[in-house]
Length: 109
Image 1: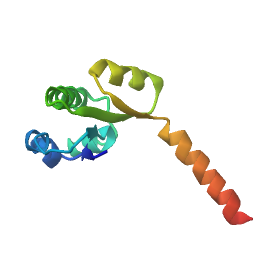
Image 2: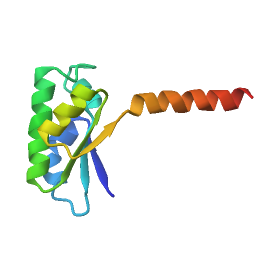
Image 3: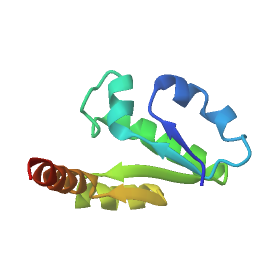
């Protein structure tokens, strides 16, 4: 599977061309990085960020590609499904915390 990330304004500007590249399966929108690139660091729910995400998903889906993103909570997960995302990473935060704790436990033994 080939995944391309859209997390910068340059990636947004180049998306139309990117979508024509053969072999790309998933176009993954990183909402936190994208909000920072748009001048709204950490504000993934800002109306302009959400509007950009909606436009990108439509463009990705219209090109026949799979739209992907990350959801940190159930409300965001539901919203991502409504927007048409097909590849949604969920629960990464708790997974990272758990892995970190396990690592530290083993490292301290």
